[in-house]
Image (cartoon, rainbow, N blue to C red; front, top):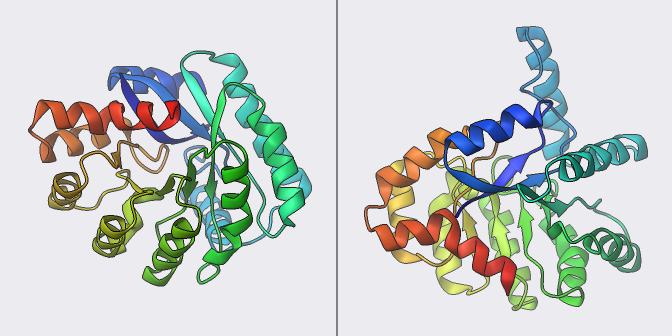
Length: 261
């Protein structure tokens, strides 16, 4: 089954999932979001959404209302589409270890919540994810998806790898292929067995080819909807990977195994 690791909840989840089915996706991992760049119909509206996105990825703390609204939106989508979607639990950074663990324990009690993420620390503050990884270790070594695209830096990716080494049984998935730092991410993953690569938002086909050649069992298909398109993401992976057995792993087998472990 083709499994999309990285799909944010959109304003039209039925249409989103229809397009996923068109791409052959049997199940999508939905992630909560505070921004909806797919919603505006004007350039001014798009600028406003991307200004909000810029604040989010720069580490702006969500208000309680914003966080609760995004979480409720995710769970409404999970409730409306059982069997077709699963979710990763959102979590606020900067909480105590006890608060983080308690929150995540409640979220992961849902059978359709199978991981944690997307966790998005501010640039140069990757250490903020440590309580999340500690909770993931305590709660069954569930996978944690971390933001990997800009404004995260190569130093942030190195911090992710160092933290992954402290929690060796927690799968740490770096999102969006590490952005422009994909080669650094690949080198880090070669050294760290529990570091996984989300192939969404890949910028070059040869980069995907190199990553899959080196780490065929730790590369995961994702679309990064709505920032990426699931059909285009699949076409990119299929252009890079010609071995049918390896392609099956990347498009779904690796993630299915990860979630079952």
